[in-house]
Image (tube, rainbow, N blue to C red):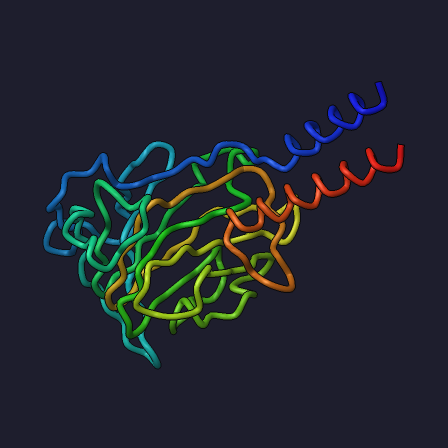
Length: 233
């Protein structure tokens, strides 16, 4: 009977580690070959509705004062598979050239706004932008950006090197904070699988690991505690 109790506690703990299913936008509902730019009427403030996320174009802010507004093109993932090699990158990918995309969640109720965001990207070099809520626009490399991206948020890429498939994550500092909008772009940046969660995800303070590695580590910790409890009976 005691062992059954331990097993039940273990299952409950494992369930408690999981988060709600992430809601994602992968651009597959858009038509490959579509170009979003000034010449096609895609200007800041004109949102494209991707239920429930809306996005619009924003200028790419250069260093020190340059501002550019290029184009975002929907391309087939097969056309970039030689370098954007993540297995989950499929269908369509957004190719940003001197442009940022702003993803806006302000139309959602506060309870439905994200507390965690992640997206896959390929850093093609030169300069990128990241802005979260009303924070300062970051100008530099996403892979070398410091963790404190904006007030009440943390930023963490899985890999700290350029010219590689990467996963970027945005965390809020506590359960009361929200991400109402963010924008990301670059001189040349490929983007796919923009996902968010209304559950709070704790930022790994000492070492940033991928989401899968963190989950495995948590499972091992819980399993070890359960085994030790059984041995002490």
